[in-house]
Length: 430
Image 1: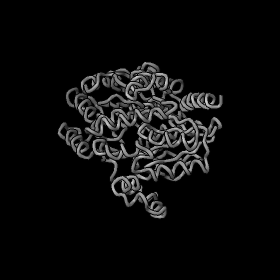
Image 2: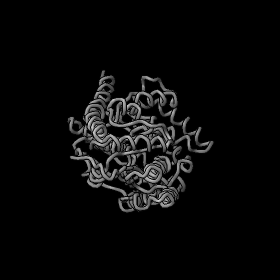
Image 3: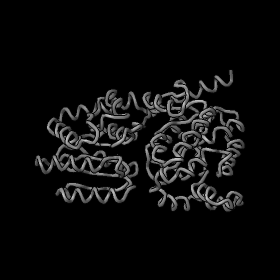
Image 4: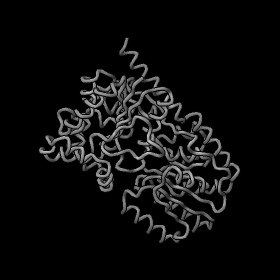
């Protein structure tokens, strides 16, 4: 089967969606599929070597912005566009793009969703002409439904099913001010008629997005995300003293590092426990990061709190192997939980909020403990139990690794995805 995957870049950041996209592509390749991976907006940040079949970046973020703002750039020659789409220039622009908020992107999001009627139609046509001339796919998959403006033109030009992943677009759109919030949602609903199938990471989110997009529930399938267990070897002996708690994510208020700092303060200062906090990830919100460091200093945790920066795959594995437990106290309901799956894969017990994907993940794997959202004292109490019962904590970690193998493997994700694609192609051929 020939599959084209249109994957939106994340402005140079490591992100769960990009990791999922690349893992899925590699899994489909192992199953014998011919997959073309097309990055959009910015180059993808990838652990390891790029998968075969990855193209240059289309719909470059600089071009999209300029064509949206200035009509002149909608008719510039290809030579100018290629310069603006160059990898070094997109990488430089990405350094300034990561602070962009959803509330600032309403007009541009709407333009992309309008497809051939929007200001970025020149870039849309270039993607489609490239696919028609070379890849000639059986199925085209969009990384999220904010790219659904592609669907009408893809169906008309290529006559193939178009699949769209779902991964939190509703929360992104809900942050926009009116009138863009309503206009974007209305356009997504119009475009949904041209999507053959939506794929959500859970049954719960599939039901939510069927209502949000005003489509029949049967048009939204659920496929659990997965990771490649071989990339995350199990730690030989989990660190016990001093007890090291890890946090790996982009550093924004939504990921709750400040809640974890308070939990460690309770353990270290109020209870006199020997505990450390290690954090890793991209600093996205600098004011939040400054407030976290200030809170740690005021609490007397300066010598117990370490930030190790943004990590590649090797650094990430080494970081996880240096920990006693992992915690991600997100303030919102997570849809993927990639970092938590990675921690569980190495055999670490995890502490996560009783919300979103973590509810099913802990039920299926037994690899961690659920705590009430936004409750640092509950986090501290649960971490204290893991400290006091090291053998039980080891057992939780081992259960988590086995649970990832059974329920959240890259192979399982790829096999279920291919089954859905084959069904669409069978329907079309019949």
